[in-house]
Image (cartoon, rainbow, N blue to C red; front, side, top):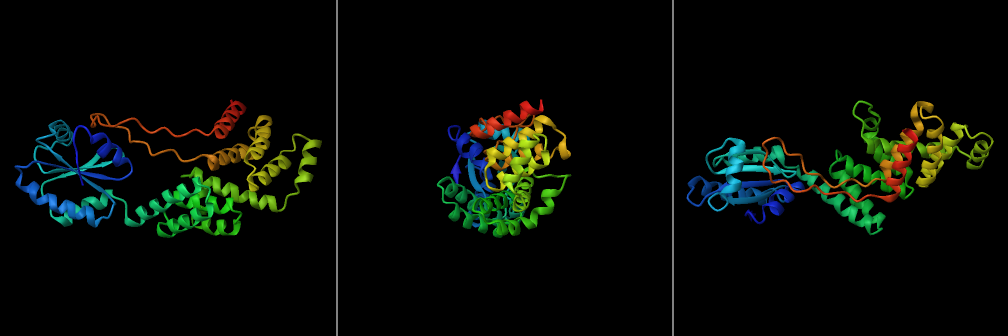
Length: 316
C-alpha cells in the first residue's frame, strides 16, 4: 500500500498501473465508512498476492485528484475506489462494500493467479535470453505455457526458443494447441502465423537440395519456385537476411506470385525478428483524467528497420 500525493501520483499510480492494476482508495480521516473499508482493502491486497496494488489518497490533502475523479464518475461521496489499468481509471465503486462484493469487483479487473505467474516466468525468461542463456529461459517458458496455456506470448517465445535450439519436433508439439488459431484468417495472430511459416520452412528444407536450387536460379532468375524454396532453407537454418533477400527478388519481379507467398513469408520473418513493443498507455477518452504520461518508445532494430524499408520500396 502507498499513499498518493501530487508528487508521486505519476510514478505510483499512472506508471505503476501499466504493469499492474492499481486500486485507488479515496478516503478522509473524518469518514467513518472509510475506516471500515480500509482494513478490508489491505487484507485483500495481501490475499491477492501481487495481482493488484493498493494505493490510498486522502481527499482532504489532495483534493485536486479526488475532485477530478469524482466528477469523472459522477460521485459525490467517499469512500470511493477507482481501478487504474494501463494508466487510466477504468471502473470504481462507492461505499464500504462487504468483502465478497469487493472480491467480485477485483476479479473483473485483476489477472488470474495463473496468468500472473506465467507473466513472471516470461519476464524472467526474457532476462535470461538477453544474457544469452537460452536453455535456462526455455525452462521458464515451458513452465509459463504449462501454467497458462492461453498465454500466446509465452507460447510464441517458447516455440521460437525451441526452434532456435533446433528442437523442431518439440516445437511442433508445443505449437499444436494453437495451430488452428494461427491459420484462422478471420482473426489472424501475426506472431503465431510467423511460427507456422517457420515450421513450414523446415518441411520444405528437408526435401530441398540447395545446390540444385541455386543452379536453377542461375539458369532462370524467374524460377520463383526454386527461389522460394531456397528462401525456406535459409529460414529453417536461421539465415534470416539471406531468406529475405531471396524473397525480395521474387517480390520485385512479381508481387502477386503464388498468392503473395513471398511477401507473406517476408513479413513473417520480420515478425520473428521483431521484439515486442513496451506496453503502451491506453489513450485517454474525451473527458478522461489528464494524468497520462508519455508512452514508452520501443528500441528499433537496425536490421529489421532496413528490411522493412526494402519491402516498402519493393511494394510501392
